Length: 277
Image (cartoon, rainbow, N blue to C red; front, side, top):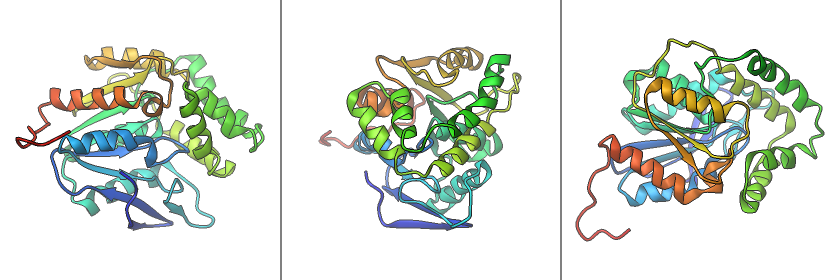
């Protein structure tokens, strides 16, 4: 599902989105830092075939969404954009699927507005409320300064190779990373880390599912997701041979896991008799 000609005017930005408009449940797919809605192409198609209403969007300053001259990407603005998008689409209690930064975003949104969310599915994202070791805290503080030292011509390839496993996924990731100016990427990175605020007593008040690539080497995601699943008393869905860019490394496996989660939550409606997949 590509981005259709729908635009949502926001303060200092214009958000591009597509809404299939029909089906149950409603699933909103939110991509990660530096990429765009295309990372969910396979999952959007798979969900739509199962009769799910699918909403995809590009975060401000990503993909086909704009950011006004002089404006900088912030976590607060992205959070408000998501709320405005749900209102614009009339999406009541949708399931929010988020990858990486998108996962941080939907965690924060569900915590602030649990009555507006039917569930969250987190893909390869940091645990916003999870405990941090001294080493974790140091890594968070140093990440942005260290990234700022890497030449802009090198950064997309470096990040892509650290994020994806398959040659195709590395190539696609590098291409989309290269479209974003380095200064903006650093702002996006800072916004991502700003969502991480340890609160060991917090537990999700909406249904939650956790998915990660087996070979994700980004930050503490691999180890933290295991602890997170134990804290929430939910399964940890590990996608074999996939890295951080799990939807491109293993598109069919991720689609299958998401559908199984929705089915487990009792949200998938039977397809009309004779419907072909």
